[in-house]
Image (cartoon, rainbow, N blue to C red; front, top):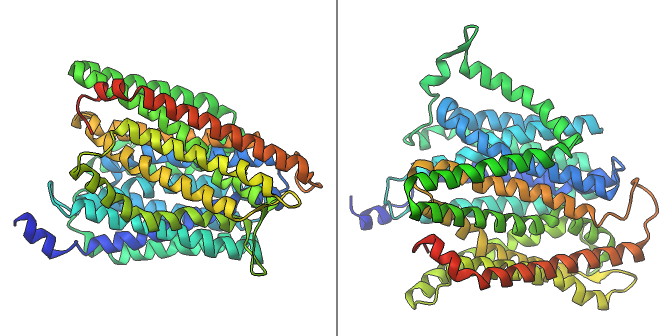
Length: 491
């Protein structure tokens, strides 16, 4: 069948099952995340710094788990069982949080981490396997799928945020759990629609005996359950993750560069470039992910959120990002095509530079509007413009980075390279928690806040982040030509 005929045929039916499954999974994940920092501070009476470190450890482990979840599905579980297992664990995790104390929260977070590792790592893989190689519908299919992700995020940061802050955090977490069950039901009952995708079934290796007559399948499922209390300990004693993530990053960087050296000078240079971009990606997301911690607490305490007499919940301010993604995502995809046609499409290093520049300017918006603060509260437009710049910065960097990894890495290590890229998100989220801890103005939780001191602290930290990011953007632009040379023609 010709490319034209395929395009006229439309997308496989399975795409829409996966679209809604992913949408509700993202509703679950972001629904929990949007409330987490405020829940830690206001219900569990954690200090700002401790809450930020818990948040950073949790989100860091979520991304780290995806690396392992993908590999286990490839080799043993198959994509369908991995996603079903992940769905069940995430739903259980959300309902565990309803226990209402720190122990239940940390156990629930552990279950969500393991479940998300299985779900998130593999549903995108099924989307890709709905299409043959060189199918012209593939990019469009992933664009549709990406819209589902952001609709789920938008619903979570509006509905769950509003319900959780207005009626009680437990109702928000309950809604998130129902969202995950919805994803599970849609994925299971729509399974015949994506049945043509390769790799769905349990692998033969899973039936083989590991030790003591026990199959690898049993070992993996039991191991997954045992990983939940391990995640509990890593979140509770999150200083361990400093050494864990640093060690894993060094090992991954070494393995990528060594694999490049083994394939020759061009691949060596490309792997060095990839490691540099991984470091840049960490800097971007460690700053961007202030949304769930310091920026949410800033919104709660130092932003005038009244709109015609209605006060927007603080957590709900996070909806600006997915809303802007939905508005501008298609515009950016068309923009890159048009710029390529006229020979003005920036190189990958320059796109990264522009993305970080906009992220930095977003933080500096808080410094500008601080002069218009009344009673230590800035107008709501401060966050609207901040998130607008953060979102356009994301669109310059995030989808470009994912595409870049597939171009830079040789096919033999494409999975390892993508795993390294996702590891950068894990490290970034953990570092984000440490950065947010610098804004901590409340040590014990529940005490009287010094709004003046807190306001000055937030503006000071956000301004410093902004200026550092501007410096990084300038450095990347300055070294863009050497980076392009290392990439050997990859654009």
